[in-house]
Structure formats: structure tokens, C-alpha cells
Amino acid sequence: MVDGYQPLTDPQWQVMVLLLPLPRKRRLCLRQTVDAVRYICRIGCQWRSLPTSFPT
Image 1 (spheres, helix red, strand yellow):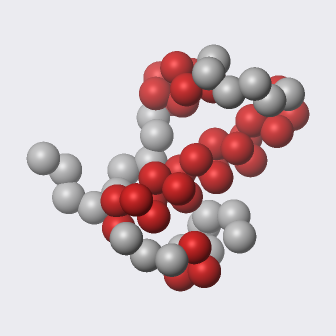
Image 2 (image 1 turned 90 degrees about the horizontal axis):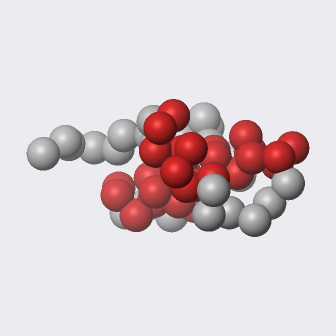
Image 3 (image 1 turned 120 degrees about the vertical axis):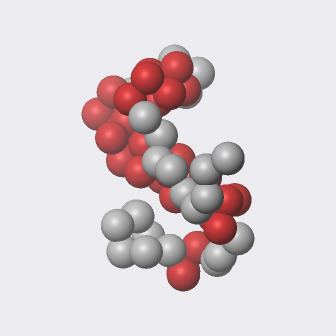
């Protein structure tokens, strides 16, 4: 079992991006947002308490 938060790997993201109906130009920002939502679910903090590496 992995402790803490692990961001999406490239292979995991390639599977997820096929399910998201957004234009290509937004996918990099979308990946950061998906990672931020996963971080919140894993750690249990509020959106405003995210580390600065995530979008706000």
C-alpha cells in the first residue's frame, strides 16, 4: 500500500483522457485539475488548502 498521494502516471492519464470530451489545448491544465481532485480525495483537505503546485 502506498502512503500519501501519488500523481497520475502518463499511462494512467492516457487512459483517462480518452474518457474526457475536451479539446486538446486544455488537457494539460485538466490533468493538473484531476490530480488536485485526487489529492483532495486522498488527503482530505479543502481546495484552498492545496499545495501551490496545484491550480487554484
